[in-house]
Length: 156
Image (tube, rainbow, N blue to C red; front, side, top):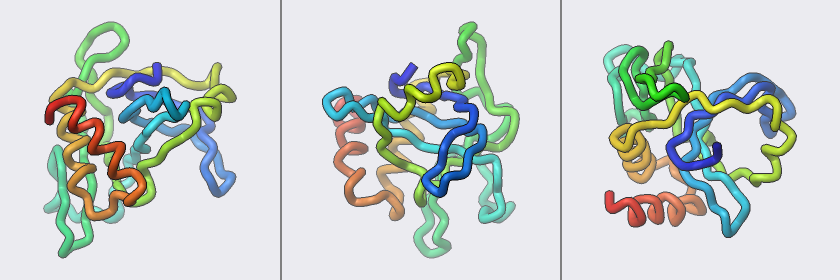
């Protein structure tokens, strides 16, 4: 379940501010040597994205302070668990500021009954997301080596 490219639904995901809500996340990498998952959280909230910037794929614009990846609703981005085409039902954003993190694999044990794999991203969708993150001016310095490792290991 915690393999790269997997799209997971976590019921009552616990945030650092002690709030909880259902959350979709995408596994970027499984750092077995560190017992961690490199993940991105998604949101369907578009309050910071102007209408003219709503397009499927990567947006990195330092001048406008926009840095995100949009999975536009109804565009196939992978396969679900029945090997059928998978698309998000709402516009789904990965906004890079504060939404990319390393999380202990042990943290996910508390979700054992509340975590479900929704889909696996296609190679093309995953590559687009990873390269977008790599080029984001919001990527935290301590996460850059992990993203670079993904790029190197996959020959992107």
